[in-house]
Length: 327
Ligand code: SF4
Ligand code: MG
Image (cartoon, rainbow, N blue to C red):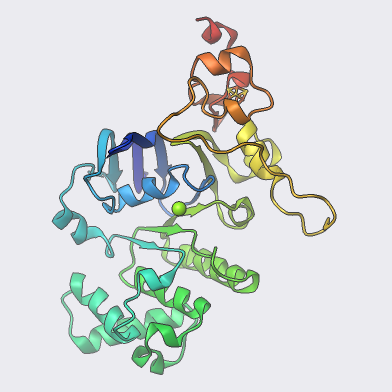
């Protein structure tokens, strides 16, 4: 089957006074029908910009897609105008964010916002919209009709997140992009929201692109994982392989830094050094300044994202053919 989302060789750069920031620098990413894909990396790696570019939400300028393409359900929307994007956003694709207050309007009731979201894309009466809204709220675990008259600030963080998911899901989108959806929530609520997303994925077959810095969240949720570093994909494989046999030194570092519940005393590992300044990307491998395996070639020549085994890609000289390493 045709993928829901197919990003190929996408380059989205920001043209600033200080220079060109290559926020997304040749990213390939595919989400298949009904699949949950994790997009993982530290903040500033380009994962949010990648997802915002899919939604047509990167301000251009200063941003600009300089190469590559974004296909959604077979349609090439790389250079779609704002008006065209509005017709599918909130409809065929939807997005939820870390902080629901940014996408819920504090001045309007939950009911008003849900009904507005529905009637922007569907010709239906207010009454029909209300009934759709209530049905969807029930699916996200809110059974109290009075919620429609509440304002966002009257709800807890977890409830707001449920409302935002209801708003995103009410028109049955084919793709839900969730950017750090649970990062601001405490652990119990976080688990509930992840469960909710998983069950909506099963029930409606909605594909999910889950953006997170937390590989623990990915372990719970995702079928496949794409790891980004400094604007590029450095590893991609299914969840099981990623945890069992991570290939890229960066992924290995991320995995080591997941806190282990059973071992409180162990000091949390963290990858030494910092993400590179996007205005001055290191030559060769962008991870080299932080990598404990860095070799001479790593600082000279950029590794490509290549298969290391079936359905497992890594961008690292450790796994690449000797012949490729010649200058
Ligand atoms: Fe480390 Fe070299 Fe692999 Fe980069 S290419 S991750 S520096 S071993
Ligand atoms: Mg982000």
